[in-house]
Figure 1 (spheres, rainbow, N blue to C red):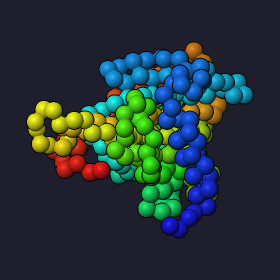
Figure 2: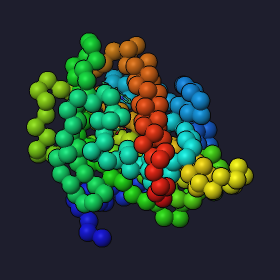
Figure 3: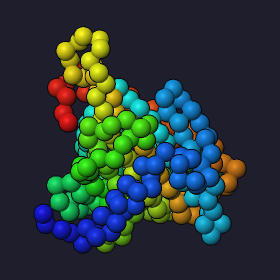
Length: 243
Ligand SMILES: O=S(=O)(CCO)c1ccc(-c2ccc(C3CCCC3)c([C@@H]3C[C@@H]3c3ccccn3)c2)cc1
């Protein structure tokens, strides 16, 4: 397994996400506040201000049926389909492919009045987790996949002029579990469910009005989770299941 210059940092972040992020809120004693609920999706946040900038971490727990952890993570990680579900991104470039499951991305986001437009430069890696822990909803996991996105530097960013650099630390942790075939249908897709934990800390980089940013990001996270999960269910519904 060849390594790359970010291998060490990546595996450290993956370990941290497996220790902390996968924990359901309330277990890890952190002061997560439930901030939104939509169907089976629950969003929690904590108030965090760094150098006067709002960096509230978000933890979303979700569950979607008839898709596998691999299908959800693959559609989240694949650059070619990013524009099909990511509505807030304007420019999107793959700067470097570090290996078959790790790329470095530059992306700019649509400007949100009255703030300056933001861009992000981050490493994105997809990996299957061996010996899966139980899911956040306490189910026995059939398998566990993760996408880990975190900000890095890169010489060829060639940023869109006028953008303020936002920094991100994101993980999408997905676990498939098999429900008992009680409804007699022999289609395996009817018997799988995916438990999802999405954690994101976005530092907007420059001053953005607190009164505006908090509700805006909350709305954006809910919209992003709804759009993305619907996209994966639509895309996979007529396909063979891929674990
Ligand atoms: O999960 S990912 O890795 C998926 C890859 O795209 C990821 C998610 C979101 C961002 C992000 C970074 C910065 C900002 C800026 C704009 C002004 C202030 C924050 C935003 C804007 C707000 C909208 C947004 C927020 C949350 C979720 C989706 N949208 C989003 C980046 C990566």
